[in-house]
Length: 416
Ligand code: HAM
Image 1 (cartoon, rainbow, N blue to C red):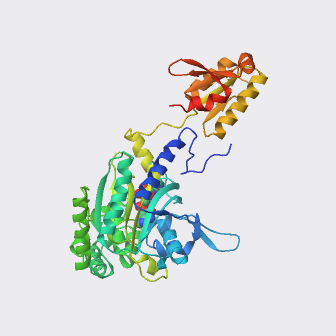
Image 2 (tube, rainbow, N blue to C red):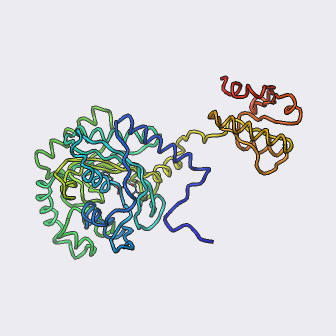
Image 3 (cartoon, rainbow, N blue to C red):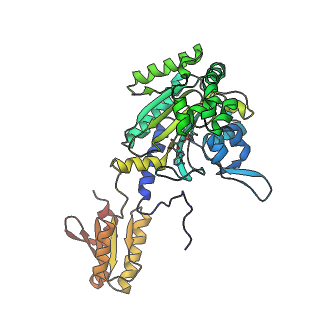
């Protein structure tokens, strides 16, 4: 027996309708917000992520599925969707399109993490990436899109927002962080000591208890924002309030990826354990330039589908019913089964979900099976029906039986 790799999950036939529901909801939100789907490869050149996501992040340092292909190139299974979307935007010359370019994706992602509830090695994201709009109204729109998606799924989360500033204010903030952390370095983990020189902001995101304690009293970025970033953040907050979106400002949110500037946000739940962030995102005005293109502002988010499903299940959110065939056509003997098969083929060609037997069940067993399938109607074809050209159709909920001419079945099934 070969088992599934650790940290991955099968989607079973009895469960896939839940995935489809979440994905269809995502596509519907994307439609009303006027976003177009993009699809990027599952693997990219490793450098895209080391440069894009950043080499001081855990994602790049510890979690990437990186390997050499047979041509000796280093490739990496995408750990997230933003870097690939930015590459797609640049490589395909989308910068010459009218701005903003509004995109979304539903994609598998891969991170070599320690699996636990809501944390997998292969997981799926619904994400949005919007290129070319600088205004805080764009930030508000992206947050509203995420919020509308979560609301449509019936999940309750809290929205936490922050601004982590731009190049200008970040320099001053980094200096303040270094001043604060310098006397504590001996009590911090080796990773934080490395972050101190390269990117002290990352020290606020460390999971080590000792580091967390020290970081708790570090200066807050919101006290260091430049006038432009402060105005941007204030504009966003006003707009969210005007739209009735509840949020709290959490100056500790720095996000786990290096490309963020200005606005960052997370939708968090307490109902799914330690991995409570179901959706996270923010602005990344420096990423395109970092990847070698002309500078262009951008913003986006991604929601983890597995975490959302876990949250929906833990909070008994309503899923729509799984699809069922409308009719089961049973046959008594071989000749009748052949007729049942023909009838089912005809109904399917008309777009009706129909089922029949392929395992030689008795009529009684076919009825039992049809009942399990949850069909609305069962039609039985026996010798009499063959001779008369009429089929008896039973309505499974009312028990009512109706004789219907073979030629009229479709009309009968679609009459309501
Ligand atoms: P992220 O916060 O790393 O951001 O991931 C986004 C979401 O993916 C998380 O909130 C979580 O729901 C889900 N997720 C992340 N890692 C795992 C995992 N190991 N197992 C299950 N679910 C997971 C990004 O990936 C950014 N690219 C989001 C973004 C888009 N920012 C701007 N545009």
